[in-house]
Amino acid sequence: MGCLAKVNVPITKKRKLGPKTMDCVILGYAYHSIAYRFLIVKSEEPDMHVGTIMESRDATFFESFFPMKDTHSSSSQSSEIIPSSITPPEQTEHTHEHVTEEDDSAAPRRSKRQRTAKSFGKDFTLYLVDDTPKSISEAYASPDADYWKETVRSEMDSIIANGTWEVTERPYGCKPMGCKWVFKKKLRPDGTIEKYKARLIAKGYTQKEGGDFFDTYSPVARLTTIRVLLSLAASHGLLVHQMDVKTTFLNGELDEEIYMDQPDGFVVEGQEGKVCKLLKSLYGLKQASKQWHEKFDKTLTSAGFAVNEADKCVYYRHGGGEGVILCLYVDDILIFETNLEVINEVKSFLSQNFDMKDLGVADIILNIKLIRGENGITLLQSHYVEKILNRFGYIDSKPSPTPDDPSLLLRKNKRIARNQLEYSQIIISLMYLASATRPDISFAVSKLNRFTSNPGDDHWRVLERVMRYLKGTVELGLHYTGYPAVLEGYSDSNWISDVDEIKATSGYVFTLGGGAV
Image 1 (cartoon, rainbow, N blue to C red):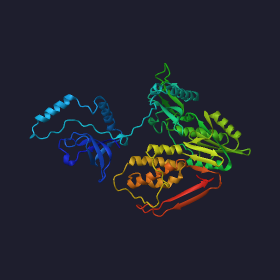
Image 2 (spheres, rainbow, N blue to C red):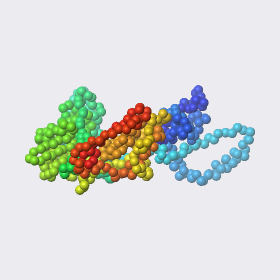
Image 3 (spheres, rainbow, N blue to C red):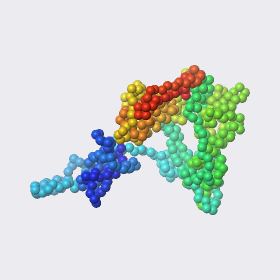
Image 4 (cartoon, rainbow, N blue to C red):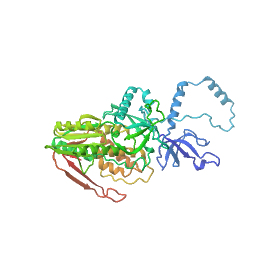
């Protein structure tokens, strides 16, 4: 809402040599017709005036431009100079003389005054305030410059210590790849800043397949795997520790010959014309994740670890009456064992081969909070739920006792879609939540996902019910008590829930250790 739209001039108003479109701002949808509602902000058509609200279906939208922002700011500045309650004496006198001398028989003249478009507030214009620097110069000039300098230096120290590249002459005919600094603030689940991160990213989008890279695939642990391992930890009393791999993708070894420009802020003095020949992988390369996983896999298998056949990111080792399990998700490693000494030995082994950070007892994994107590392990995403409710304006909504009304059958929308972009954004957010820790909303979200391309009023009402249900169940999550320690499966299906396609909907759930996995 609030974006620029080029709306066609109505056929009854068109002139042969006149303008074909008008600049408008979209306000919403028409109440009694299949059309959009627009506010005219610029028009060269005499009969279509600025500030008029019109309805039309013929429009082209520019979702990156918001004319009301500039109009609102200029209106505010002018109101500070000349308050609306004060009228200049000269203007009043001139207007009075003009009215008394005007000939009553003359045709009424249209006002020459340019109307100022009304601001409709945040409901129609949305903009994000982001103070994350976009370049190294912005980072060094920001209020958090000391933090950014420290993290940039740490990144470069890791790159140099790892022997990622060597500075050399540029080969004849070689066009080196570019690179850039990317900055990010890593937040805790409560929204506070955990740490400042800086990464030197290679511009891998310029790589050519078959020369600069070949394979790019790299596996990661599935959420199902992580839930199963945590349920086993609750059932068998396993300790769960966590480690983080620093500068993960710098560990991979390259098979291809790749050249890159020297990074901003770290060009070697006297060697400005030279380039970096990459010896090891770097963030941004298309094969970076694959090379990292191969290096990690080779390191662990050489130490006696075996790869799980169901999930290639799970490793285990048995010996001396002890067994240890490792689960890898890109750069996060979960370690499962009953003996703390064995866990410390594994940590020492990993630290000898990679630059590691010991996080101790697992607390947060993939933005999922792990709470361990006497009654088992609980997985929560309460902060993520609150973030969704805040983002889409449901934080103050009235809670609903259930996420779905089984008596309501949804049909395809035959009219113009209602807020399709926002609808799809909410669905995407809920799908991740349902797949991670909230299986209770899986059925409702899956049903609503069928209508993402063209949602109507009925679909929005059901979606709002799901959001209101989340409002009342923010602290709800998965809880593994450890009993029963056997895998149980349940399935069910309903009768023709899809009235358009005349199809049924089936579902299933597997539980282990008292919770869904």
